Image (cartoon, rainbow, N blue to C red; front, side, top):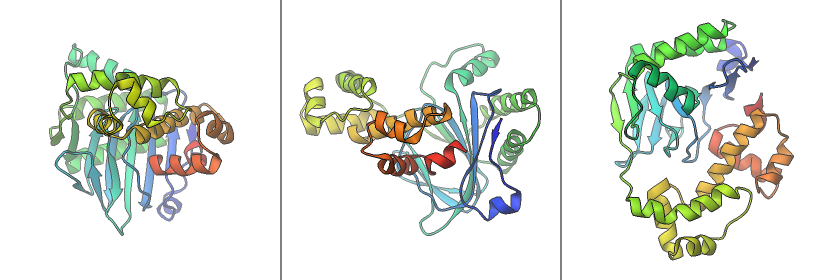
Length: 281
């Protein structure tokens, strides 16, 4: 088990996040951050995430109607690939916890108790319920503890099943014209196939049969990001996976197309809220 968790007092005095991972439970990762002022760029990840605001206030971006204020005791459930960010209210610090769940594992668990596969895109949910927040805190404390893996998995499955019934504020998936998604598919496929290569906007326009302006607008509509921002986000997601696998930072920077290791460090921290070294610890 990989665990970097200082004592409670030391953690309260240190705003750097701490991470929990366990090879026996490869489908879940957790973090805690206390009195943090670190900010995230709008991003998405291939995991389902559950965030908890423990102290202070933060601002959630990712809703069509604009930013949403989050207060202590709030949980945020974010499906994979939804562009979002949660940052402290300007000029303040906040404390939070975050779980990342493998989507295939989560889908299998849900199908066990519902008996059906999902039929539509899942909404982001914001749940302001103190009892649910306290339950999440107990779950995360269990994950960070030395309890047996089967106890942790059982508690996680029970929490997911119970919280799936929570309503809260729902932020629906934006409606995307199917023809637009199909039109930019060649550009997305190109970026996915060559994550380390800088693909000029001219080339993406050629692949899609659009003008450069139309490509930017179409990417924003379909993915929530510009082409360049989408590619940077994809590189960071690949870096997270490879860091967990033990890859060195200089090799990662080179193979993922960053200009140097310093550039890689800056981009990674802007998306993940911490340095690659801290993420690995």
